[in-house]
Length: 590
Image 1 (cartoon, rainbow, N blue to C red):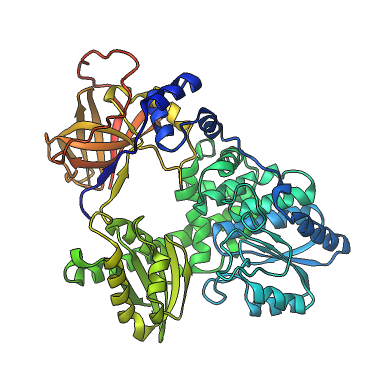
Image 2 (tube, rainbow, N blue to C red; image 1 turned 90 degrees about the vertical axis):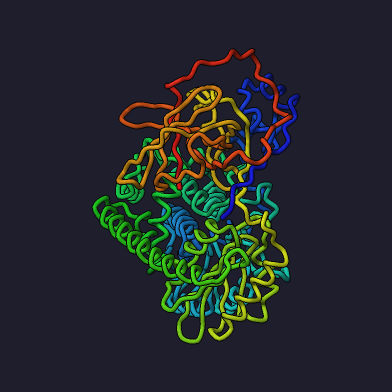
C-alpha cells in the first residue's frame, strides 16, 4: 500500500487571525476553516451555523407536480409511489406515502427487486402497475433517465411525476412529465438526496414543512453519501435531533437492535448502525421490509421487522466476508502486484447486491481501481470503485467499452454488465488504461492535513469546538490534526495480541494510546521519530466525558520534515512544558 503522503494546503496567517478575531474560534479551528476554503468570515460563520435553507418554490416547475398530485387526491384515483431498494429510495418513498396518507389519498407503493427488476423504472413494472389500477405514478429516487418508460406509462393512461436527484442522460433528454429534481429544476443547492427532494415536494403539497419526517431526511442524506455541505448540513443537524426524539416505532426499534442510544445518535451511528440494516434487505432480498418498518405504527410488529433486518444484515456480513476472502485470494495469485494498476476479479455465485461493498473495501485498501463481477451462466454483473482520486472510473470503462454489454456510473463508482468470455480481455484493458493514467504517487494513501497543532492544544476545549463543524461525512470529512514530532513507546499487547497499548510522546507531553486490530505493528518503530495525524473527539464512556485522539495515519519521519511555514504563531508565549500524563487517549484503527 505504501506510506501515506501528507498534504498540507496553504494557510495564510492573516486569514487565520481574522477568523480568530471576528468569529472567536481557536487557532486550530481557524486553520481548518481556511484550509477548507472558508477564509471569508461570513462564509465560515454560515458553515458553523449550518443555516442554509431554500424554499420549495425554488424548484422550477414544482407547481405542476403539486397540481397533478392535488387533482388525483381530490379525484380519489390510485397513486403509486415507485421508489428504489436502497435507504434513500426507501425513505423518499416513505415520506411521500406518509404525506399522501395524511391527505387521505388512495396510495400504494412499489419497490423494485435488485435481482429481477434491476435499478429504476422498467416497462414490465409499468404494465403491472397499470393492470392493478395505478392512475398517477410518482417516482422517488429514480426515473430522470426513464424517457421511454415514462412515455409508455402515459400511453397506458397514467399521469407521471418524476422526483429524483441522479444525473440526466448523456443526450440531455428528459421524461415528458412534471419533474422535481434539484439540478434539472435550477434549485440553488443541487446536492440534495432523493428524500430531501420528496420532503420539499411534500412541503409544497401540504403547505407546511413535514418536520416529523426530518429524521428520515437525515437518515437518507447520510446513507446516500451526498456532500454534507450547504443545505444538507442544516437538514442533517435538524434531522439528527428529530431522530433522537423520533416517535416512529420502526426507527426506535431499529436503534434498539443496532444498539444506538437515541440520546447520542450521530452521523457515525447512522452510517454504521442504522443504514446498513435498512440496506441489507434490498441487497439480499427485497427492500419492502425496510419500508414496512418505517411506516409501521405497531411497536410489536416494528420490533419483529427490526430483528429480521438485523438478521439479514448479519447474513449480508457473512456473504461479504466470503466474497472478500475469495477476491483477496485472487489478488494473491496475481504475479507482481506492484505492476498492476487495476484489479478485475470475478466469481461464480457472488451476490450482486454485495459485490459493490467488497469492491469499495478492496479499492480503499489497495488505493487503485477494483471491479468485482458476479458470474452467472454466460454473463456477469459488475460493480467497481475508483480507489484513488486521480482515477476516473467511468472514463476507464468508456475506454474499455468494447468489452462491455452495458455500463454506467460516475467518476468514483460504476456498474457494468459483461459476457463471461470477455472478462479476461476487460481485465487486461482496464489495467492497461489505468497504467496509462496512474503513477505510484497517485496510488499512495493521501492524508490531507487540516491543522498543524501542538500537543498542548489537544484537550477538551478543542474537542468540543470541533464538534461544531459536524456533521462529518462526504465533502466534510473529520478534521485531521497533525503533530509533526511524535514517538511511540511502551508498546504492550492486549486483547490476546490483537490490539496494543502504547504511549505517544511529543514535545508538549505524552498520552496513553490504544491500537486496535494491528497487533504490535503500528507502522512506526518504538522511539523512531514519526509524523502522525489524528482526529479529536469527545468520548463518552461510563458516564464520563473526555477528549479522545483517534490516530489516522502515522509514518516514520525519515522523509524531509514536514513544515507548515504559513501556520501562524501561537497567540500567547509558550513555556517548555513538563511531561503530562493527563492528555487524551489515542486510538489507532486498522
